[in-house]
Image (cartoon, rainbow, N blue to C red):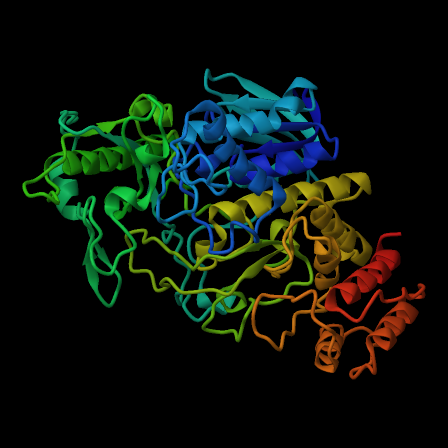
Length: 614
């Protein structure tokens, strides 16, 4: 066997989740290797071109880890620092460079890469972090369900072998899973396996969500930048079809290129616009730039998971022809707002994607191989169809948050599951842990969700939260010299992992009025992780920290802790409630500063941390 180089943790895939996992581990002083199939880190935030992230309505102040917010603010500061903003934009705190309407922040993918590289710079310089680009896993040594080493193939055909204590698969389609022999699912599970109402009666491995090659165009009025007609254009134009019509089930809406059609949030052009020229007073941006990720370039010709290299190349060629064909159609045949057809003034900006053909370096992946984990999230756990709200199912091992509707893009087959709304949900730690392979974690879209719930867990901030949870879990396991499954099964180690996440600025429970940085953020999040506040008479996502404690509060909080011996169902007072919990854990009960909810959370946090962390 070739001698391998050792790291604490090897992260296969420098995706959105892979970057988050690395940042968490590096912050804990661990030595990390990231291997990445492309030459850009960041995944769907960068190399996949979707740099108008799919987020939720709370994202500006709650719902994601602190490191995700650091990335978003890094993007904003990059534009502030390197370009002259217009008077209308220079004092906007929540700058959206593209003023796109699908996201609260749109930016150029190459800028996202620069920000990520800057976030990792000090670790690269001090030797904690190594990044190996253009590398894919091809072979592994596994002994007694432990991964001993993994061999990667480089672009030039050579191989390198590395070993580590723990391995995180954060690749886009779960590339490490078959290499190490981990059990996984592809496509849609059968109803008999998951119990999901909208799952098919039999397994459907071909039901893998479609993928897309996005591209960026600049609007240059008066110029002609029409590309050569791509292969298979006429066939794709009819079959796709190329259109600005969108079928919303109950109605079909035709978007205008620059105008706002009735029933829409905005124009096709501003949907995922990355640069609004009106935000800048700088020669670098004389015109708008828009990223095109639309049904027109959404490839439904087949998944490239578990196919030969030759078939993968064929599929990529077909998907790229489809994308370039959509561009050609926009340049030559789309109906113009001002009459006539085609916008030859749309220029393909290859430099923004950093590729020779102007398409994203890697297709935008919506669905990966998914591990068979200790916990599997099903649609009944998150969908509003099955829950009362205001939150999704409570997971005692909550390790991150997400909120996005179940958005399933057709694979070209007759899928049964459709889009549906969800309540704000948690990422359960057990969904990151494989059932058998001991020193492996999922760090991205390959966590243990189903084909249906993948449709809501796959989005940018959720994948970042999954990666951060994997990194913190790995750091905790390394510190205690055990494997992730042991952490998950041990109540104290599980709570230590959650405390580490919270202390790292990663929320695990939905309370939007107590964001990161709030004086009681850590106390409220840690106590909520025990289920204390999962019952909410107000049926909203607010905690109201300054409100006086009521008897109703105490009864609901007691219901949240009902599984704990010695907790009274109807506490006489907040002091009595805290005393009973302290007695259960044989710790001293703290004195309430006052009779507010925030003081109760702080006091309960002191008890629980004393019981589990000290």
